[in-house]
Amino acid sequence: MKVPNEHESAATFEELAMPLFDQLYNFARWLTQDTAEAEDLVQETYTKALRGFSSFQAGTNFRAWMYRILRNSFLSSRTGLKTMVAIDGETDEQLLPAENATPESILIAQADRGLVQQALAELPVPAREILLLCEVEEMSYQEIAETLAIPIGTVMSRLFRARKALRDLLRDQSEGGRDGV
Amino acid sequence: MGCEQWRGKLDSYVDGELDSAEARVLGEHMRVCPACAADALERVQMKRALQMAGERYAASTELRNRVAMSLSARSLAPKPRRHFSYWQILAAPALVLLIISLATNFYMGRENARRQRIYSELADLHVAALASPTPVDVVSTDRHTVKPWFQGKIPFSFNLPELQGSEFTLLGGRVTYFEQTPGAHLIYQIRKHEISVFIFQDRAFGGRGEETASLPAGAARTLSFNVENWTQNGLRYFVVGDANADDIQALSKLLRDAG
Image 1 (tube, rainbow over the protein chains, first blue to last red):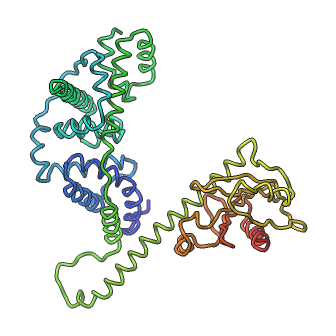
Image 2 (image 1 turned 60 degrees about the vertical axis):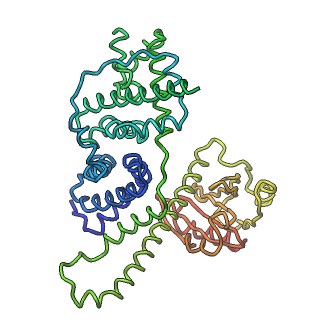
Image 3 (image 1 turned 180 degrees about the horizontal axis):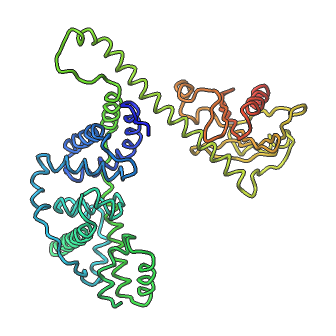
């Protein structure tokens, strides 16, 4: 096989990486909750990824690889350090069935976009990031597992807990709103 | 399997992660179990709400350009050296030139991509028309029938060549759209090869002066189709087909002479 020279591999890198730009930025912005930090994070991600592109294995998931670099850069940043503990302290718990759907919870699911955004921003990073990867980036469990470097079983349990946490937050919000009236 | 076991799988179900056999069984279960169906519905709605909520932030064009520039700069710039030297001072003017050429390259690369995109969309239009049960809306070999048919259907007029003495036959025409702009799509035949001729107003391609630079006239080859394009009297002509390049050129010349 022909080994690509530096110029060629950069051209390929650009072709692969630039289409992900908008989604990576959106993800970075949600993680950091700050425009300037998100911009730095995206720039850092592209720089690191280009530098490490030779170690990227062709045929493996490039998107997951980019997200992993972005996330690792975030975790080692000032803001990210605070969230490390929460992720490391996690234990895999048994999957519990969620409580039954009630008309109320269906109302929550239709809650207005602003409320969902607010709740998502309030979630701890591990919950926020997995929901973004699953729902917004529409990644498969396998891709999420590669991005977060965790087993698929952990993807499922973390996703389950994240959804429950979001539902609880939304329920609190809607109850709070009702009390206020 | 009872509801309790299914509940634990609803998330995987709505995420499309159950294998097809299991998903089918669960689907059948939900048809007779309103509770599980309602539960699944709630999860789907939640997913949708999150999807809408999560697509929120757009990066600035400035950041995009900065990142794109840093990628192309890095791929061509010399490796950083450890010591400063006279060389670097002498190299400064060269570096300026390099940066200018990088910017040009970057621009040209984007224009190249744009040209490729236009060509492949036209190739799509060509193939889609031929694959459709009615490739043309006005069926006629007579240019005096085909040309007036477009009257009032497209906002411009054009001339078609006399084909007597050439191997080309006109099969007919249809109205087509490219980037929300109406245009004429004519289909010609030569030795069993169909060739599409597209005619649009040139300003539909993004402006006048800079436009010509972004889409230079000339022949090209894309996805095994031969393409020729040029501008004439404010109209942009594209000739697309799997016929050989000489045939494409010959038809282009006939059209040019007529226009």
